[in-house]
Length: 262
Image (cartoon, rainbow, N blue to C red; front, top):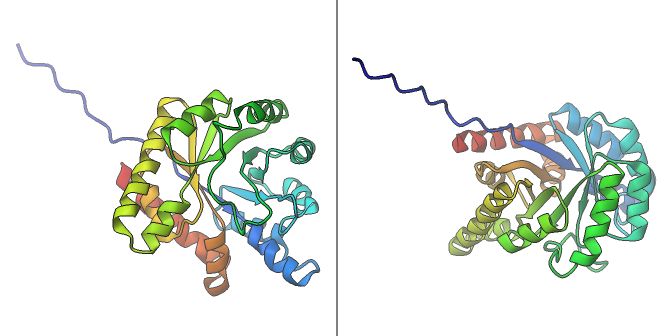
């Protein structure tokens, strides 16, 4: 009697890693001088043509870059999902409900900060965040929480009702760029562990903040991360090589990193 043949083992099949392009700082340049140029909506359309899977824009309370009219135009004119970054305030919930973006990412916001610093205090703000998440979900938005990469915070995000978490990669990126090897290893381990926790809890996991070609290539190898949101670096690179070229290079770096995960 011959032994049964062993089944062929297929390589791990991972979903294509999505790239969301944040166009906030096109608006920053526009607002520095006033007027209508450069147009962030034009940048969004160019990003999509170059391979972006979605567009992210943060409507801040002080309107320092993206404005209300930009959000309305983005929803009307782009062909890919719009990710509306916002603070969990009554004003922003009302605007998001009216515009009806594909996704809403809730982020912490302070007037004095240059950019978003750190993740949401999901544990401490559970009572405030849970009804906001529910209201946005009823309006048809996929809600994500921008959080610190810890298992505790990821679990709290699920308890609050969010189907998606976006892990804050800023501390790791800063340590990596500065050559602080041990700190970078520690921070990356936190990201990997938090992404693993998200997968175990059935949450979709995104990552973003401070990513460049090198760090995007590395984080792309985490199997449970399905989307990267990148803005400042790409807009800065576009000054030198053009937006399409910058996005093409980023896409290649992400695909290379993803291939390692397989």
